[in-house]
Image (cartoon, rainbow, N blue to C red; front, side, top):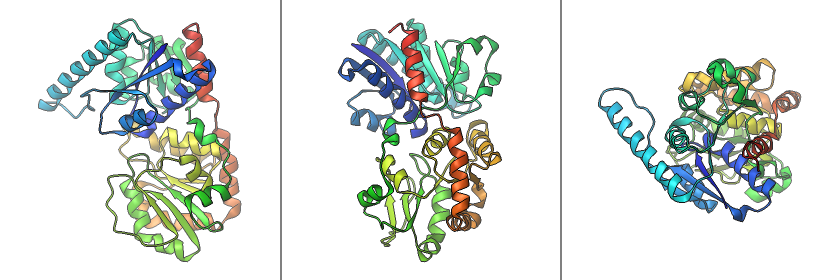
Length: 363
């Protein structure tokens, strides 16, 4: 029985690449019944729900993100020590074989615990500039999987031999062949209207939601329709319109993507990996408070290759819907964006990372 410790979550962007790698490990080994996944995290966040859906074992830890100095720092320090101890006990009790982490606050205590117990662990970094947790853990990691060639510039020289640049893994189900017609029938939306998929990640995005909500009637009047994930933190008055389909969270993203002519989203690395693999024309609104401004860097890189349109967060109310209309009224622009963004696609990233992990473990 292979036992994997997963430390990824908080948001879908951190969780989904790890899911892809685990799926590929299961497929390569050919017997998922002999693989147990232990996910650590916050019972109120996405990692707990996903663990339940996949019949993984979920272990709650009190770890939270760094919130500043003073009394907040002491609280953070105490919860970090608590989390490390919980995970160390789990590793010993269940005889965990190795760990996979994707950065952010959940990965740090898991990485420290795995290293202290002499267990291999593997880090995934989807952004150009690694987050704090991955930077702190890089020296201890067995291998460091990056998306960008230049990521090594932000890590200690001693880590360079551990770095593998394979791209950001995407969920296997997203590559399921679903036709536009099938997807629209499944979502019960109009079969012929041009469709806009709007989402801001697993938590939603207030600015995107506000920009759409204030002006969505302009889109409907022009014969378009919306598939719209608003997230759980955005309160919206009831929209009673047959051409606006609203979800708190879309579980079946493969169908949602397949239904869409264009995508409106944040510029997280996981989102970019997905839309590039699917060749979707996109308007990206980088999250302005992302660590090291990595979403803006991601978006500008695509924009410089005419592979996406970028609208800044503060421009959402005034520019987002006009940009959507402009794109939907230009089939040639949609085709150009699709052709260019697909060049960034690395759909085999999950498989390559899984193979590298298994080779490292001599499996």
